[in-house]
Every structure is written in structure tokens, then in C-alpha cells.
Image 1 (tube, rainbow, N blue to C red):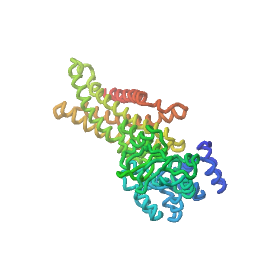
Image 2 (tube, helix red, strand yellow; image 1 turned 45 degrees about the horizontal axis):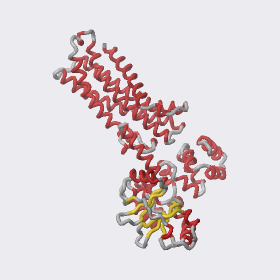
Image 3 (tube, rainbow, N blue to C red; image 1 turned 90 degrees about the vertical axis):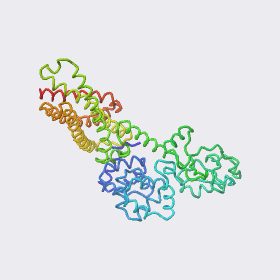
Length: 468
């Protein structure tokens, strides 16, 4: 199997030589997902150029693996006829996945290029709520009657196999479309052609309702070790199937969401692909919990101030007051900054695990995280100013001393610096470990938290010495 870098080089050479046959040959010789990922490393205009040169069968397969940004660019550039040629090669569930990621104007263009029958099929899936069995099922499946013979079943498959998403498992229904049983394709080969399907079908049926949560559906595949799962409605009528490749996507989506929630990232604002999440969404996904942590830090701050006040003669030692005032801030900021580093680290580790990061995109990643870190730093700095003003105003009966103002100033600058550095540290560490061929998960919470703590101590104690 060719490496991604090698596929890129071959494509680049073929483009320079304007060798259409070579480009088509590469698409036939490589895995479609690898070809799509290699294409994505070029500019959008070049991606479109390559795509137009491909034969329609390969183009349709490769199209499903492109990210939504390139899919949108291609659709906007294509005529209705060209879009229809692509859509005719896709199954209904693939088209559903496509329009889920597209803006409304692009969706209208897609629907305009589909036939009336396809639109009817799309509507039959789109009516179900997101993240349910109905929303991820395919309606392109094989259904046979119990009184059909093996010979009739084989002929039906031969005649319409291109219309089916999966033919390894065949489902048997009655005249009311109710699910009676299922049969494996191999059983058609080993049984007599005149045998009725009702006599050899398996009546031990594992099925799910259209309204079942997709995460529960995924657990059915694991529990029963199956490749295909029939989906029925309330009256037990067969309405679709879910295949194992659909479930893999669900498992990746659900595990990513769990990891993001664990790190205090709002999964609703973050796309599964790192590069599909814009700056504002990435900022919004992280800022809520970080702000809450900083506000909750008021409790820690007050407790430490009360404890220090109980130590006799402490404030009489030189310039100890500045140190006493800075330590609670240091502890709170270290906790928040450690969380920030963990957020960026977990997102990067997850992206590396899913092969979403390419070496050519490292500069883009750094630029993106620098801006996100700056936005988070400014937000938390403002919150820090407000919370310290409240604390010191209450402590000093409405008056704020010069020392307090200095602490507010330098701690706010410190937060801005620490937040940006912590965010970049969480980004850099997994990439460095990946570069030296070590497991990026080594950059886990304990290591990053320790490094951030050291950084916070150096910066805040340094500012304290300036004040003193």
C-alpha cells in the first residue's frame, strides 16, 4: 500500500506532465480514502481539476471521502448534470451524510440535481431525529419474500445488486413488509435452487427501532457480533438497515464527543474533524468551562486569604504582602491553565489518532491555536480583573491599595501569557512525540499539568519579584 506522501508526489508529477491516464491509473491503484486525503493537500482549484479528470465511478467513491470544504467547492463548481452523475453513483445514506455538512444553498443545488425518487428516499430518512437509528440507516437493502425460492433470490440480486448497499445479509419479509427472518448470501449458494427461503431463513432476529439512540445501536453490533442490523418501525415493518461501516463512524463520533466533554470542551460547537471547526466555534467550545473554573477560583482565593490572615506576624515580614496576595492567584491560574493545555492536547491527540493532521498543515494549526489562545487569554484576563476587584474591594472595605492594583495588573498579564503558552504547549507536545515516533498519548494530563504548573510558578513568581 502506497504512503500518502508518495501518492501526493505521483499526483503532482502527473499534473505537471498533464498526464490524465496517469492520474486515473493512480486513482484505480490506490485506496479511495488515501487518494482523497492526498488530493486534499492541494489547493481547492487543483482538487477540482483532478476530480474532473477522474472516471465517474472512481470520482463518486473518492468524493465520499473528501472533507466537507472540498465537497462544497466541487458542488458549487459543477453543473446540475455533473452533480447528478456523481449522485447517481451514491447510496442514499451517503447523500444524507453529504447534505448534513452543507449550507442551505448547496443543499438546494444537490436536491435540484436528484430525481423525484431519490428525493423521496432522502425525505424518508431526514424525517428522523439526528443521532437515531433512522438517521444513520440505509434504505438501499435486499428484501425478499418467504415464499421466494433460492433461484428467485439469486436472480433478484443479480438483476439489482448495484442498487443495494450490502448483499451479504438478506432480509425476509411478509406481504405487510414485516420482518420475518434473515439469510446469509452463502446459504443461497449451498442450498437447492428450488428451496423456499422461509424454510432455511434464520428467525432469531436482532433488530432495532428507528427511534433508538445511535450509541445504543453501536452496542448491538458489539454484543451480537453482527455486520448488518435491520431497522424496523413501531409496527415491526422493515424500513432500513445499518451496516458495520456506519457504526464505526458512530463510535468515532461518540468517543470523540466523550473525550471533548471530559476535557471541558462543548462538543456541540466542535466538528469531528479538527480543520472543519472554525476559530469562533473552537473558542466558544472551550471558553465556557474555563471561565467557570476561574470564577469558582474565588472560593479557593478567599480560603487561602483567610488562612494567611491567621498566621501571626506574616504580613510584617518585609514585602510578604505581595507574595501572600499572588500565591492564591497562582494556584487558581495554574489549575485553569492546566485545563487549557489538556484541552488542546486532547484535541490534537484525537486528530492524530484519526489521521486528520498532515505535515503541510502544521503552520495552519499553530496559527489557529495562537489566535484561539489569544482570544481565551483576553477573556480570562478580563474575568480575572473583575474577580480581583471584587475580592480586594470587599477585603479593604471599598478601597483598593496601590499594591492591589499592581497585583491585578501583573496577574492579568501573567494570565494572558500563561494561557497562550499552555495552549501551544498542549499542541506542540503530541506533535513532537509523533515526530520522534513515540505515542502522542504520553502527553497526557499528568505530564502537561506538571509542565504548566512549573511555567505558572516561574512567570507569577517572576512578576511578584518585580512588584517587590
